[in-house]
Image (cartoon, rainbow, N blue to C red; front, side):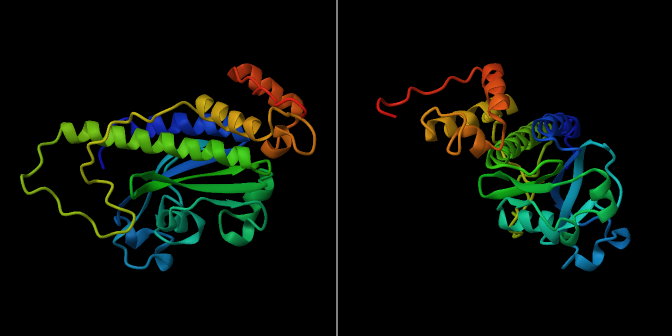
Length: 252
């Protein structure tokens, strides 16, 4: 999948996500053909060597795209599972036992949680966005990361559309893949109209929670508690993002 610039665009998105949820490292893998099977450290976990996840972008502690996790077999560990199930995975304990990274690395960087989210376009999973956070990810954080995954899908779809316009394809086209995650190299003429900034995603998440709490910020049932923030932090974010409290019904 030759799409000039997609690594830089995804890396910029990951940097924003890192800052939003205290993540020292985040990465995006995109679905592609099996290509490094003979030298892949995860070969024993790969069922058929037909397709796997290719590390395409990395932000935070490293931007390198090599190393033992540059390919992830579909279905292997949490990242590979998410590609098949298209269901987000969030771990807040026993991270070392899940085989996500070396225990010493997790301890050195004070990792408290991990999240992997599918990058989906229509019925197809284009890849996975995953990160390690130094705080326990709250529901509001996960909602923001789901929005980041939607942004990633829009970026990939947009890059694919641009690449497709530059390639003269055979009249017969290419047969669709039977892989449940879809073929990321197939032509998909979809404009990236749904691309939104993380600020807009965060604003939406806060507004939804405030609507649920009828504008209450602090307290056991307040928005700050639900979002996993201090009330002062939430109020600061609201001011920065231009979020206003909804009108509270009388008598409450």
